[in-house]
Length: 356
Ligand code: NAD
Ligand code: ZN
Image (tube, rainbow, N blue to C red; front, side, top):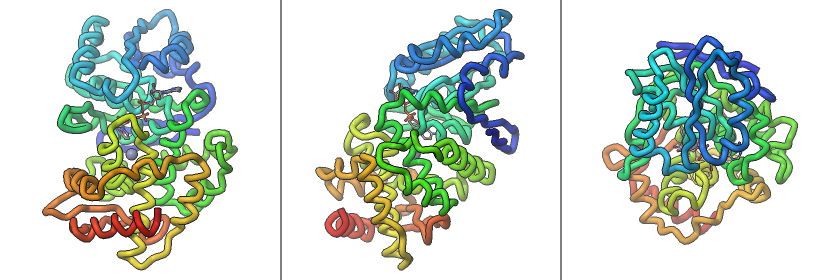
């Protein structure tokens, strides 16, 4: 399956299928000099197979990062630049990001800045990376905040071999599926209903999985095409992220996956939507489904409401003391709402006491 993403300056294909890791070499045969960036978990599983797909005419080096968010740092950014220089990469060379969002964000930022920008390919190996590999946002973290140093730099190709999902830990699968649910909430009621019919423990085993992934990416791509730099509709992609980010940072990274925190955030955003718009959303159905799938929706029980609200205020969506939240009028129709701090605190208290 192929999707084309059109941006202001470029156009690139997203190819999704089985066994594509064996085809990457021939798809980028016109690059002489290639650096594959991956991490310690992915390398033993897939690096050799990816390397084997290249011809002997091409020079192919690799760089292996420690696994995890800590690699999106100045230190690893700098080491990776050193490797680019050591491997003699020039403006005609290619970087391949073989991994999850961490590898994609770091390798993409290096590609964006090395020699004022060189080409790169995203080969997502996590389900969550269906989201991070599309849209061109690349970044590293600063001790003061996530994704504080970054750029917009689109890949020349996204090659998604879904066979690589087979080795993903369950919580990473749940994390990625939560973002597909988010995309469904923004634009596709039918997709939302289909996902809710997936049986417990069959997220990637269910027959519809490739289709769900494809549709999720198509929704993300269409939003990014309209609003590359996040002045308008791209904000909708933050649905579930206001409380989600707050939970993620308050608990401490690594305690809950990003998507699992966003899953709770979506329940809350739907709950606030019902209060503000008087609409009726399938919150109970979604919550029950999440529980059956093993989403840790109670893991944040110990967190203080006030601490969570303070986090939400620090979020880049907060302007003039108001917190801007993405809400839904119905599944498929999002809207951004400014809510003041006190009102939001009340919603959070009520949500936790009445709902969870
Ligand atoms: P990740 O890259 O850390 O991968 C999660 C874990 O799975 C890691 O331990 C990794 O080694 C392991 N792994 C990866 N592929 C595997 C496989 N096929 N089999 C077994 N294990 C595998 O995390 P992630 O969830 O993919 O991405 C999170 C990052 O993405 C965050 O830094 C976030 O900021 C970023 N992100 C960026 C965007 C964007 O638009 N650029 C959007 C969303 C998220
Ligand atoms: Zn997210």
